[in-house]
Amino acid sequence: MWLWPQGFWPRLSTARCRVQTSRASSSGWRQCQVLLHELGLDEPLVTPLRERFLQPLMALLYPDCGGGWLDSHRAFVVKYAPGQDRELGCHYDNAELTINVALGKAFTGGALYFGGLFQAPSALAKPLEVEHVVGQGILHRGGQLHGARPLVTGERWNLVVWLRASAVRNRLCPMCCRKPDLVDDEGFGDGFTREEPTTVDLCALT
Ligand SMILES: O=C(O)CCC(=O)C(=O)O
Ligand SMILES: [Fe+2]
Image 1: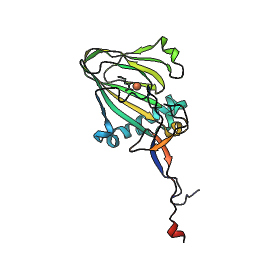
Image 2: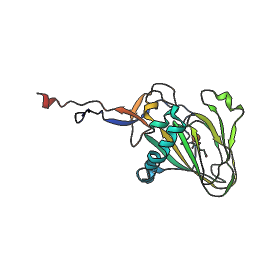
Image 3: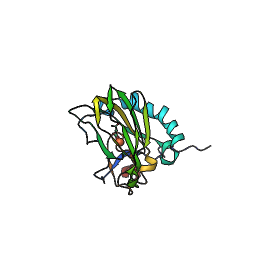
Image 4: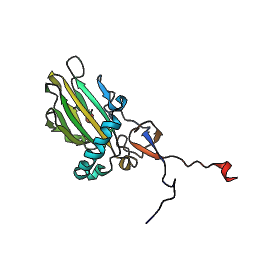
């Protein structure tokens, strides 16, 4: 049996990648979006949902893109309504995997459409359409090109959870497709982690 000396494990801090691309993250494109961590709902709701339910499922369904290593998320509720946002342009998510749950209310239109992975955008020539069904969630790879068709009637509210695996994105930023240029961030940041530089107490050494 191995016993690690106390303090051996590197301390990890959360980070984001400095390089952004214009068509990357879909947050900021909309008028109406509520971040669940700003409501204090990460710890009691979204983190247990990720750790207990989504992580084991994603480990089975998407082992190739970090499904077994999901260690953070960004969760938000989006609203589409007449006179407000009605549709969402084609994009890929700043996530290894995404779950998108239709919460309500009554609506028509607003189907999700999917193309290929963003590295092969020509695949979008023949998109796959998936209707939202209230109470059901759609799982997809973050890098899969997608968007939402215009709402026709009613109001649509969806819970979107971008699931992230630092073990995957620390090697290659899914947005800029380069080795991430990390800067410290708060909370889960953008799902990257970095080792905090070891500080040496010089006084204790002398
Ligand atoms: O409106 C939707 O259901 C799609 C939302 C989405 O793709 C996103 O927020 O990244
Ligand atoms: Fe998305």
